Length: 317
Length: 225
Image (cartoon, rainbow over all chains, first blue to last red; front, side):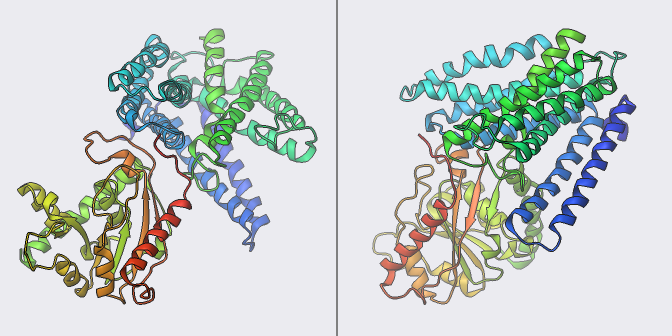
């Protein structure tokens, strides 16, 4: 029974890296517990919630990496579904498009089925071509023309971000052929997710410590040039350290891929910020206590996943 | 239906809520409740909410602990829910509705609210949609007089206002296809007719409506275009 749920070919480096993440979060938990002990201020409560949610995220993420392919796909399908639902609940939508949204949701299981079966050709055209052409056709049969253009654009942008882009993360799992160099698909996913999330943290910490010059004040007033550059450099160095261990990427290409993840991760972050600012919300939702919504957590990944995927696919597979 | 049969059916209701309805609401609709601690922990009590979807009743019932499930009685339109035998059986015995005639027959002296009063006297928690209909999705219309009359008759019974959002988008009236949207339930402080009695029924309706509107404003939600 257990053998059906687990992936029998998890590389030992992946297991070591997961153990490292658990140790890091354990340390972070001990530190925050020390700082916030006995305190009931709002920001400290928020911090404790945030750490608790990180445990849940790490538990689910670790499970998805050692799980069988089917189980891992179910996990990533659920993330895409929750992200798209959050997006549809956030942006203005037309009552007339209810049934169009139904078809948009239906694209999720199909897209992840293409991924599961490693059907690259279909994976790469399904949403950008077929769904892109089909949804406006369905909208036309309903016949509501008022607000048609923005509705069609809103719908497709949501699908591209939460299903197509994010789907690349799941495709990393099945990308490397058996016996290829590196630590398998799970190694690629781990490398990408750890660097993307830590890049957010590095940029935040550098910005808090040395931030002077605002980088993009109209969209994200707290982001600074110093934070961006410091984060980028740290991520680049970390990528060079982790790449030989989890991926087939060697030095000096690993520096390039680190810089790529650091910079496009920043763009993903501010793009979702722009969406939230447009709608007038601080967080995209409240599904993850202490973090906000799903989109708040995966914002950078919507950019780093497709960019990293096509980088490794072009150069290594 | 006698007590022994009810005893047989009750486990099905519990199973339906624990194994089907709650997981569905949590996973598919991402239901989030705010102010759950303000819900009544014992009857008699009335819970009132805006009404946009058949899912509303399921959401309100799922907010309560399983131990109270046998005490929860949603008020529902007899003309709709008793219209066919299967729906009628399910509504009365599994959901546990109190069927109410929305339109009184010409010249009938029957009091449509009497079964609700009786249920409150038995110590039940009654769920009531004062709009009287699901109406247009995500639009709250004027409240019918029924809730004010009921409140005046039971001035000491706490009336808990709840604002529901998202369900009218997910499954509005007249739509057979379900489309997931994030859903919210915001629970407010209870009001009693006894306390708000000055101004009578009109003022009470006004107050209740304002309460639910205030709960709605505490939630930032995207409207239909």
